[in-house]
Image (cartoon, rainbow, N blue to C red):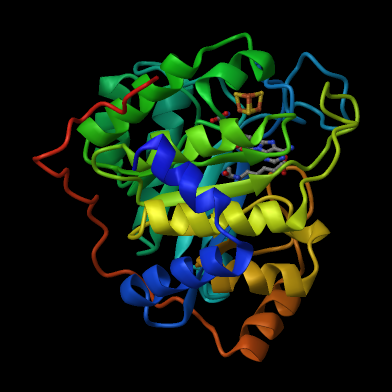
Length: 331
Ligand code: SAM
Ligand code: DTB
Ligand code: SF4
């Protein structure tokens, strides 16, 4: 979608916008299902990068201590538990700038992925930057989707991170696509950005070819000790608007209502599901911060007549459209 089309959606009266997004949602996702994804931080803290929202950057003094890569046995237990609890996707996150082929830690990750993928869930990893070889090896080991958020607009990204660039993020996403993994990419609301930055972020995501298979929409969880610790929360109606626009602009994506749900009322989450969100992180912890209790989430879905998404039989990445350029246009 072009920026002016996205802006026009944003300018609609609230009810007109969510009515439109609801129609798109019903056409593409008629099952009344919400995907449950379990997140596990397999390597926490001590990260070299300076992302100003992040509890895990070594540059800020937060309550998060640097830990070593978790043992494979423990990760397998958590993955099995996630499957038993109804998750269809298991996402493993690491606080690294990136991974490099030929290193011990990358070999360990490949070994972990191979075992987790045998459990039959969608396997997602988020390990930072990847080159083409790393992407191919992860795909071969069984990763189905790679999470790498663009987070905000290219213009605002410079105010948030200085140790890598927006272009670096796009390069990794290109390697993910070239290797045949699904792209999971979205962003964070509440980084001090303008509405224009949020809309540009959605414009860029919608112009990926193929479009992302999933789009996490995070609301900033302010972390004491980070530069964004005192940032004001995002207006609830703006969160719903962004979900609705994401649903319209990227109709086949799972739009994941991600970080920040613990701070949201059940009514706000319900409005987000109505507007087009169809995936959540499930389990009482995100990476380092809290998430609603699983029982509360299941109860809410039941109250709404929504059910947990059934396992996905087709784990292949979406195909590119031939008529569209492969590169997202950066204005
Ligand atoms: N190191 C890898 C990377 O940066 O891609 C993977 C882990 S990183 C923590 C994954 C994503 O979590 C970030 O891109 C960001 O969108 C989100 N995130 C991190 N801290 C957050 C916070 N305090 N509030 C909301 N979202 C956050
Ligand atoms: C994403 O977009 N959100 C998740 C996942 N991808 C890796 C991470 C949210 C992190 C929230 C802050 C924390 O727990 O440290
Ligand atoms: Fe490191 Fe990722 Fe946190 Fe940035 S967001 S500091 S790269 S863990």
